[in-house]
Image 1 (cartoon, rainbow, N blue to C red):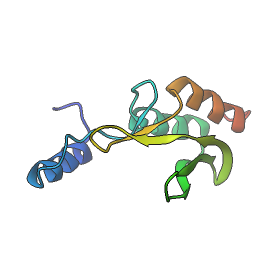
Image 2: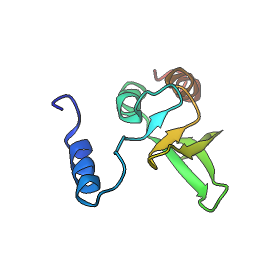
Image 3: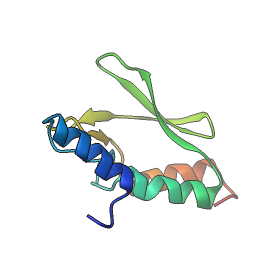
Image 4: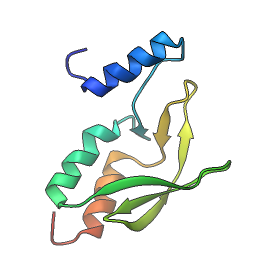
Length: 105
């Protein structure tokens, strides 16, 4: 698919070669892919956004960090194919980041 980033096709090819379930990039609770929101927010707000696993044993604890500072906990789950889904919407992500870097975006 031409509108997908190259890395998506690379990951999909690896999964196909290894006969793994369908690849889908990390996405938010509303189905928005993180790569469609995070880079834009980082550019507009002049910040760095990361989803960080702080306890990567089950049950996992994840958080959202902006410029290295924890701004909120985030639920994270895997879908039926093992792909990552974060428990906040694109609107919630934008609101959280903009509320964190006030005056910048």
